Length: 248
Image 1 (cartoon, rainbow, N blue to C red):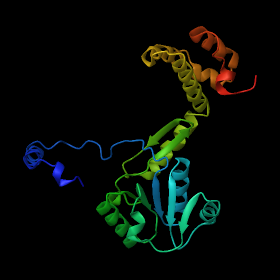
Image 2 (image 1 turned 90 degrees about the vertical axis):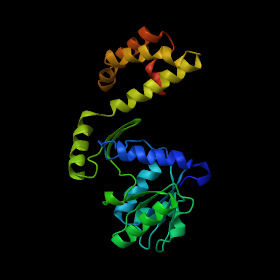
Image 3 (image 1 turned 120 degrees about the vertical axis):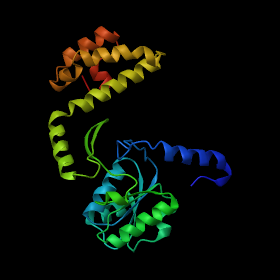
Image 4 (image 1 turned 45 degrees about the horizontal axis):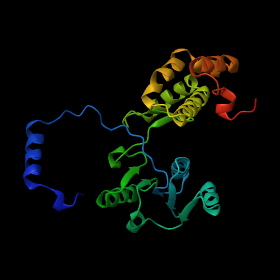
């Protein structure tokens, strides 16, 4: 909650009146956002299969993860033994939320889950309770991940089964070539910037790569065609193998 010394009472009154007189229609239930949680302290309450999946995803995103649960899966025990997570085999306490960026509740006890949510809201900690969107500050979409490409699918909690179906469809459409493509684009951009090119000057070059079906060339592993296109657009020094760190 904002410090009261930074709040202008007259402005707050005016804002409240405007909200009452001109309510904005809500057309989206959730604000789409990609959250950087690298080196952030995150808590998972619950050590079953659902909690384990949430821990795995948090670790993949670079979070510093603590788990509080009386029971724990074998994977969580292994992660703890290897120093990947902090595991405490006991019931949840409000103090577990102190210093945390977000908390995910994954217990099978609705009373405990409600308590986690209430305390997280009170302390200003982002909260997600598994399978209970009404007790969440954010929900987790189904995702298709191909390297730096992440496609998120959300039904705003209305039909996780349909989101899962869409994810499977998209996984067939977007293959590993998209990961290679984005890695290549990133390496090209890095090299151009190192040569003192202005970022805005690159835009049309990258548009050419996309329009001339570079992704399809990578999918077909037609590296000679890739190199011909790179040479045509950028000149020497932009061979696919060297940019991608592959041996020729």
